[in-house]
View 1: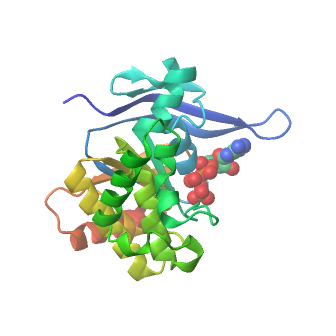
View 2: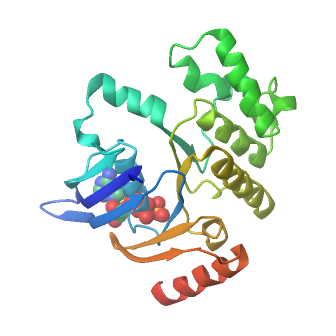
Length: 249
Ligand SMILES: Nc1ncnc2c1ncn2[C@@H]1O[C@H](COP(=O)(O)OP(=O)(O)OP(=O)(O)O)[C@@H](O)[C@H]1O
């Protein structure tokens, strides 16, 4: 099967004061298959957000290429780049980024409003994803009236309402208590299995990482370890991740 994402020899340098350069990513190579659920781990400053930003076309690598469905992201310009961002990828964040003045339903509808969907199509799509995520009774409520866990579930609904191929999560469980974090991760696993959406999330947390199928561990801008869950139970994978962290951190 052709990979959904192929990352070849990526580097990212940032200017860091007078004549200094920060080598945030150094020769990164990997592939993600359609439907994979990947975790990117690493200490603060390892390069996780930088990598996510490059994959999501929010920034450009200094060197190397990223292919999405065999097309180099650098060849996407103007309208095709806007279409890629609007249709193929999606984000959830640590702080949810819901709009407080819009209802839950209006928040979920946003990605469709930005494209040429009719009101009827929007109503149907919002109702469908809300039902999948158990949010139907919350649609008319303002997000500020919800718990953190519920707000992140709404953010997932908004991220998936337009059926993107790839969901990025930047520390999506970072602001949640452990119960809400588990609920969110279980939701992601279920959606990943049901819809075959590919998911890539960054996390410091071995519990969150244990819900993924494969883990990359970044250190000083390099992938220094990979772990695949394979036939392990989630509890066994968690133990393997904790051992990995003990070795590398
Ligand atoms: N815009 C920028 N300009 C200069 N340096 C940057 C910029 N963004 C990130 N860096 C540097 O690049 C390196 C990687 O940062 P990055 O934010 O990707 O790490 P991270 O693993 O996501 O960390 P955290 O877990 O704290 O979010 C760090 O040394 C950081 O200081």
